[in-house]
Image 1: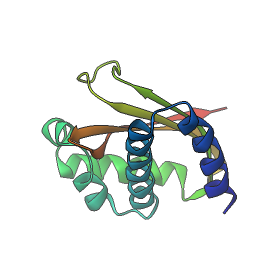
Image 2: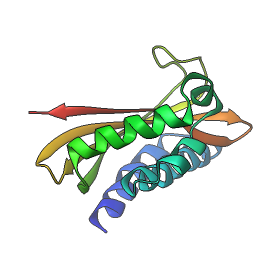
Image 3: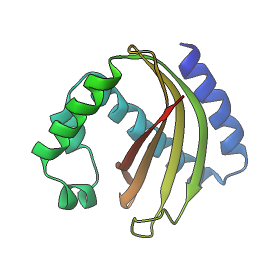
Length: 141
């Protein structure tokens, strides 16, 4: 519950600085990221792959995605907590095609006593449909 409230309060400040159309678009991007993270957390890697952007589907097979996800999560263990840290709307992300992106970061803790910074990057694919384009986990010491 605190996770949801902290996200809502930070996003409300973020939305004030945006126009209403862009704010609505950012909200859709954030919702796409949240629902995608739930699939990853639940170990539903086939469905998380299906919800990735078409660009990702062209670069990594479903089998490779599932194998990589299983391997990474086995090392981390189950999610213990995730706290929203930041959101940045941008048109350029290094190594990815230009477009509309929302770069979301979360401070996370996993059951194997691993702390991490998770970055989820939804991308607007067509009209106002958002799908996750990139996901990174940076382990903290």
